View 1 (cartoon, rainbow, N blue to C red):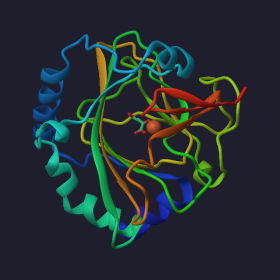
View 2: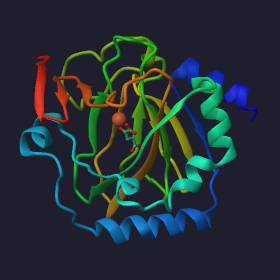
View 3: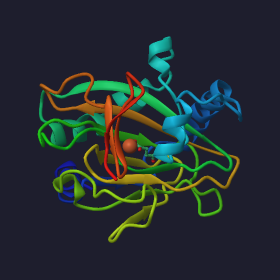
View 4: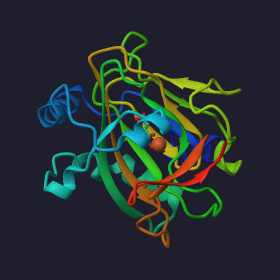
Length: 234
Ligand SMILES: O=C(O)CCC(=O)C(=O)O
Ligand SMILES: [Fe+2]
């Protein structure tokens, strides 16, 4: 599909999916790297209050902060570059590369927005790549509510209940998902041995580097840098 049409879909729905994009070989070798880093039972990074209250159980890794640049070809790929430019404008900026690992039997992630939605022109763009198949057996499907990047703060309520109009994405190895940080999204519980996603976050120009410091959940706003609940919502 044309870059312009993909960008139109992104702005209509708050996300766009490109299936079968990256090669099996590239995905297998990056997935091996990810598993070598995490093993099958990595320590939690977040404190217990966050893990319980947010109903979110993931362990992040920022490989480029440790001089591991093996994931760069994802960012440097021509479609990723051209589509990012079409969506964000000529002068977009990279934010960081973040890999998220979920262990077997964990909750995934509750509904959230990655950053506060009050300023519509400032947001993070998730550029997600899946290095293994997500399946109904493994769990860990990504849920989105189309169009909600235009709806302001996510409705307050139970963190992980089913929402009206939710769509289930079941990305396969090599699939790319571009997802607006204000679009309401979550990850279903993990039943298989593990689940990972790789995210090269980007942002429009004039967006602060700490744009993702506060995330919005249905029961709170949470500030990662100080590990505090900055707003109770229910
Ligand atoms: O891993 C995913 O599918 C989505 C993770 C997520 O919440 C994000 O990229 O902000
Ligand atoms: Fe997110």
